[in-house]
Length: 119
Image (cartoon, one colour):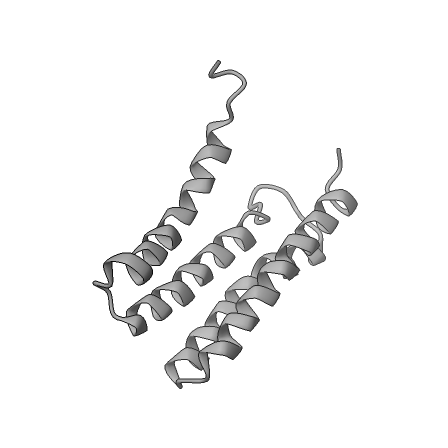
């Protein structure tokens, strides 16, 4: 049975557990302050975005420029969002930007995998 179960995928889905804990606390336990929930959600999402971007980094072989750009862009985006959050921009804009960038990463990563990475 363990040959058919890919533990990498299983462990990667454990990354959504903190979001479930925040939702449970927000609606049932009410122990964590709202501002902490908002900031944790922003920073944890940025952490996920940066790790997804780092998947494309390969230090052993020479990679195409588009893949390098796609790997660096999440770090730049995360830095901008951190600065914007520190300057107290409206959280609606920040969460909208996070959603748009996650969608961008999903679509562009698939495009890069099917276009630039040899099979």
